[in-house]
Image (tube, rainbow, N blue to C red; front, side, top):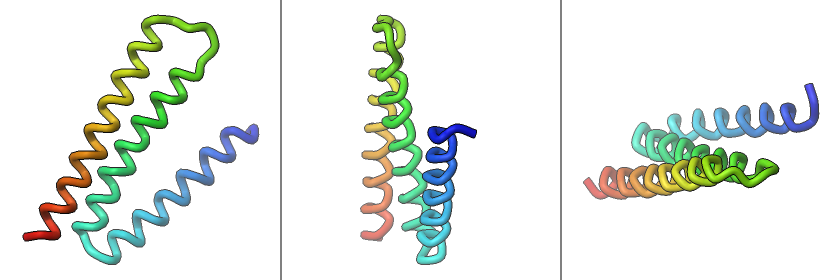
Length: 87
């Protein structure tokens, strides 16, 4: 296992532990955090795809779509949390 994979595993374990703590506080906070983390994953994936060497127009389009999906999911997760906490 190289250093990049080890870092990814450590970050994923940290995210899982944080989500467990959020779900212990309440299902609304846990669900909101999960939706936002999934959106952040899409945005991170778009940065990973965009960072590849050799500018391919299809990869640039894929990165743009992933970034848009991620930002929409983050916004919807935040909106869900705000609405659920207001009810």
